[in-house]
Length: 322
Image (cartoon, rainbow, N blue to C red; front, side):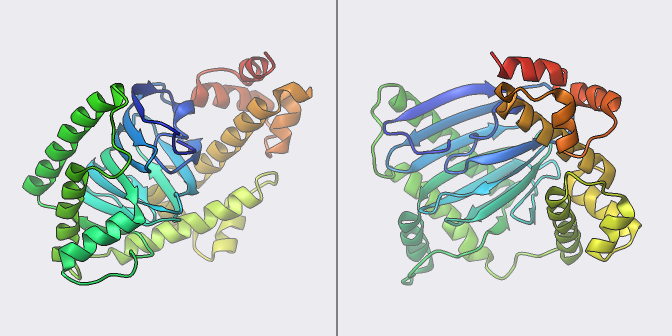
């Protein structure tokens, strides 16, 4: 959610693709849908006003998410099914644990079927837990995301712990009986995670080729978003990034599971939807809004928009004006 709740919060819900901006505790994000799909995603979320939380999520649509993580918290994400998704430049794998430090600028590409459990705690708690695991004094947590891949048996053990906590804390949250401070059970769970990180330190392999392709795709994405009102032929994009057309194609497939042209189209459509929703009362027409995001083929725009969002641009605009 965009802000920590003043009291205990608990929800077990199905979310449509337009409602995913607050699916991760401490991380309000901007969401761009990348492919059609109306299947709802599943979210179980337990939050305390003491800034600790549990998120159990399964996403059923492809989208790009970007935002800034809470400046005072750390997120520990345990991936069950990765489905070629990425977060913070890390290509996710099944049974992987990712630690996201406070204040991180987060960018993620989510593919249908991604399933994970997340624990969010104040940074001071995570530093203390890591210090106990390492047997030394730590002044602060790491300032960059890192990851470790578990054995299947260890991953299953941690998942069982998380599911048991979610059930217990969910029952307590229903009665507004959650503690403000991080529960002992959650601290013990994170202690096991810290031990896994400590034991794997220096042994996590980095796929340099994959990382390079992700960086190339993100550089191209930044250029696309900065010039969204303009015509962006692929040759121009290649020149700006300094790579060949084949390399660009490969980078986009690796990062977004889309071609560069498909990604540009998706970004334009998502920007149009944001304008249609936010400025519906301004008296602007669908045509004017389409032109503001660089769309010139209005007939194709309506068809592509309906395919991606399940409704026409006019329907979105009319709903915003109600």
